[in-house]
Length: 238
Image (cartoon, rainbow, N blue to C red; front, side, top):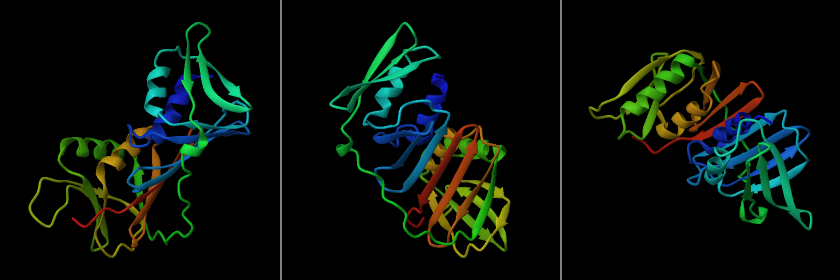
């Protein structure tokens, strides 16, 4: 197994430390996890095809520790489980020489993320491309004291504003192209969290940010063997 593939999978849900405790589910050559941030503002699912491993469910409580351990072994690795009474208690990763052991958590201490039972209508769809991803990441990085970005519809033209406020502020305004647009008010979301979503999926060259007037947004990235879906809840008014 290629270690870089597993690290990409982890990056897409860990989001630079925003999500740490998850359940990994392996079945039919696919690895999948669902997750929610501690503040419940982002809910997501990430899957990776081509994961040739036994059908199992693993409790990964400290993803940050696993990432550090993976840095010790080489690029091509083998994964094996240590079990007690059919329950996986640790995961061994070896590159044929060096090996690491990562203690797995009991599944009972990792809650399943909530299920979105009713989705609103996503009446606004914003085109996301490589240029936007790069600009947004740089924009958030240039405004270290800014927590939100806002989506603004003005006379049918949409823009994303990092650092928007009704008062005079430092801000970055990015004009965007919409496929559909029925936004009837300014909606704001967590800028740093969305930046981490873009960083984790920056190899994707085309996606759509869908936004509902009820204050929920979603974005999906499909590239290579990865499929990542994120739902983001609006932030308080700015």
